[in-house]
Length: 90
Image (tube, rainbow, N blue to C red; front, side):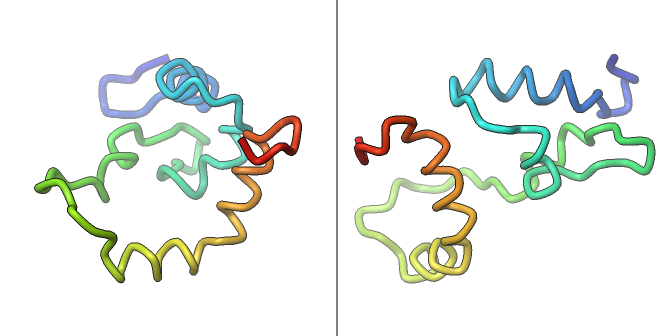
């Protein structure tokens, strides 16, 4: 339930993310990497947008992006493995 302070339950957050992204991932497991969670276990909804910035489209890949992806490669491999159900790479 929403408390009108920007906090929702983990179940609500996971359902919302799944319905928007259409990715069948273990959102409850991933939440600690994507949003802030209160001591009571509620998700601080707006924390998922803190790192987002509206910028001009990139014409080429930036070195910082490559470095960031490399640093998080283990997490990305896990996520891609979950998405690629038949292990075809497609």
